[in-house]
Each structure stands twice: as C-alpha cells, then as structure tokens.
Image 1 (cartoon, rainbow, N blue to C red):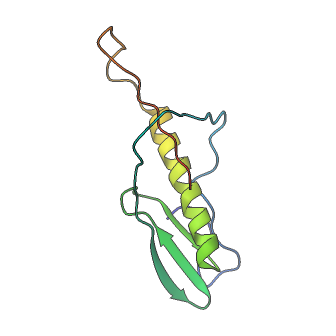
Image 2: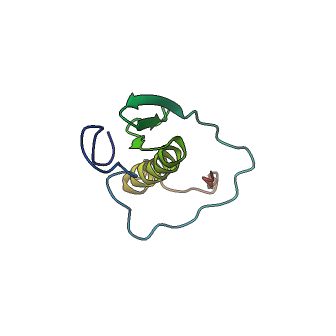
Length: 105
C-alpha cells in the first residue's frame, strides 16, 4: 500500500512514497487514458480506493472523496516516479516522436 496509517490507527494515507522533486507538466495528448477507481468500505469509518491498472496506487481515508483524491495523487506520483526513473531504452532518432501525457482528475 501507498501511504501510512491503517483503519486501526489514527490518520489516513495520502499519495505515493512522497512527492518527486521537480514535477513538470506534460501536455498534448488528444485521447484520454481511462483508469478505474475501486472503492472498498473497510469498516470503522475507513474507505480504501485503488486503481488496479497502476500497481501500488492505493489510498485509505475517512471519506470516499478523500480516498479518491489521495489515490489520484498516488497514481500521479507512481507514474512520474516510474517514468522519470526509467532509463531510456533507445535514443531519439529522426524517425521517433515524443508522447506527451496529461493526467487530470
């Protein structure tokens, strides 16, 4: 899971393993990327939200709205972390193009 506290503990969790320094905005995609947020009532006033398409994108909060906000943040952080830390497999060539991705929620 991403974040901190569980249902038996105080507080909830937010986001991924911390924000990535130097976050930049990437724009230009004309087709939306559609992900599913799955909610689960954990009891004792806790709601879990997860995005199955993004392993590790899980949050837990006191309300559905807060859990959604936190899991969206987790998706952003995880994708940024994975994309920014990945070594390029090939160098840009005259026959290559750049993919720009925007994540909004």
